Length: 281
Image 1 (cartoon, rainbow, N blue to C red):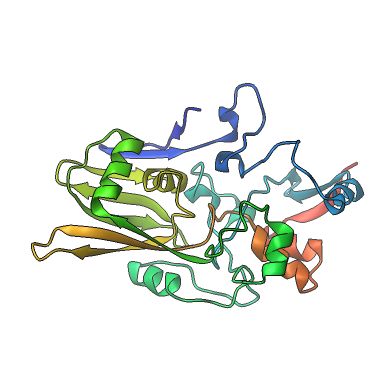
Image 2 (image 1 turned 90 degrees about the horizontal axis):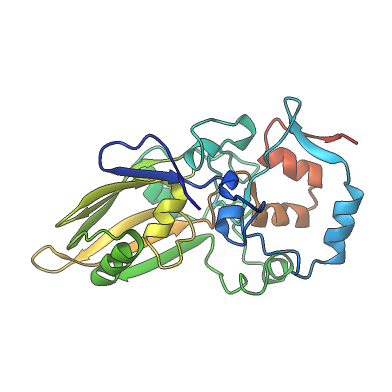
């Protein structure tokens, strides 16, 4: 698939991946299409019953059917649509606190450090194994650190990953610097500084792809370096929050809300502000 570009500046690579990139099919089985796993997957009877019982019911905003995006775990704050895809804000896909209590949006690097190193009382901050087993497929249940996570790279390992993913030889990697973040703390523009090259990359998914052989859980992370006596980095430590792009419905947060007695309509009203369910046929 060919990514669409958002007015990159000189030396900057800015990409997002739209559904319309598929020429002959609607969805794929990767994060590009929100981990659709195909019609051959075993679907529970409860899920089938829910689909049948809500036949003809749509989530609507301003007279139009909503583009109801979702992700695994927001990390406590959801993200704005325009920071992940097109530069067109969508009111019902704006950042919210994943709690009944408000949390301030991330605005500075210090905010990001405090937020990512904290453990706020939000819906998706759960370690309830029984609940997670009900909502996550077996291969995702192995991921237990989705709310707050850490990845440690030896410098040479990260240099090799970057060259493998981009074809760019950055030389000795000196730094990873967040130039712009969204309200959830997710990095929108990241500067990668090496002895041979310096590049700026965005958006959210492209950053995750560049910095991992698969991809990072999210782009909501902070970076620290460990250096040798000469000041050359030995390793990079990425501390992060959340699992996925963070836009729209937080799946783990929604499951926790349901377990606490919230109705489906309550949950949708929480994540898609201003939208409502409507029987269309």
